[in-house]
Each structure stands twice: as C-alpha cells, then as structure tokens.
Picture 1 (cartoon, helix red, strand yellow):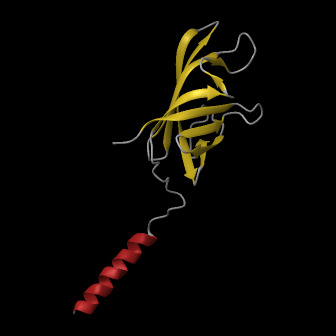
Picture 2 (tube, rainbow, N blue to C red; picture 1 turned 90 degrees about the horizontal axis):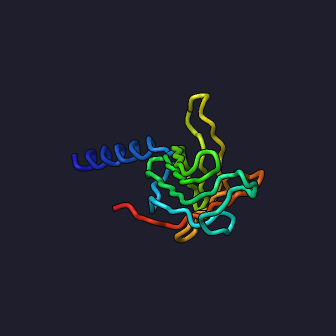
Picture 3 (cartoon, helix red, strand yellow; picture 1 turned 45 degrees about the horizontal axis):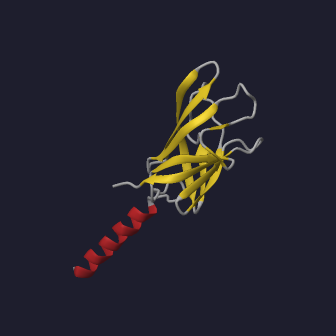
Length: 146
C-alpha cells in the first residue's frame, strides 16, 4: 500500500511540474524599482533631442511588478506644456540579464507601443528606447520588494 501511495504522489508532482510552462511565465525580478539616472550618459535634467523645442526629462522611474507588467513614469518640461508627467504601463520579459519591454499581449489598436531592449547589470538597468536614434536610458536600483 505504501508503494502505491508513493507512486501516486510522484505522479502528482510530475503532472504539476509538467503543467507549468517556464518559458512563457515571466520570472519574478529580484528587484522592483529603478530611478532614471541619465540619458546617453547625460545626468538629469537633460534633453531627449537637441532640438530646442524638444522636451527636457526632469526625472523618471521604472517599476517591475513581478507579473510581467512594467510602469514607466517620466516628469518632463517643454515649451508648450510646461511641467507634466507621462506614465505608461507595458509588458516586460527577462531572460538572463536581458530585458525586453513592449506590448506582448493583445492591446487596443489605439495603443502606441514600440519595443525597448536592455540589460540588467548589478544595481543598474540600461534600456535602449529608440534603436533608430539610440537613446540609452540608465536606471539605478531604488527599491527591493519586501
């Protein structure tokens, strides 16, 4: 009887593990919050584009929720709007030290979404925002989950 119970338990464990698909599930990050430190090596506040009418980035944060969602917030200043804040909620995937941020689930057609790619190294995250005109946002670790 004991051997039958052990085999049944082993079968239940194998079935449970087989139902989990680790390739598609986002791995929980070992951290959650980052603060924008610089853009292309320039400390904040700094411009995104050297065009005088372009926005100045005053500050920014990036938070990974551990469930595949990222919230990116930037405080900006420009000539027409003054100071304002933008917030975007997107998807993320982490593979090793690589992170990809974009729209991986179905989103409404009105959502504008461009993929960003980066690396996580130690206490920093570098993210290439626009590969056509390489804007590298460097974030520093700001908090850990409790």
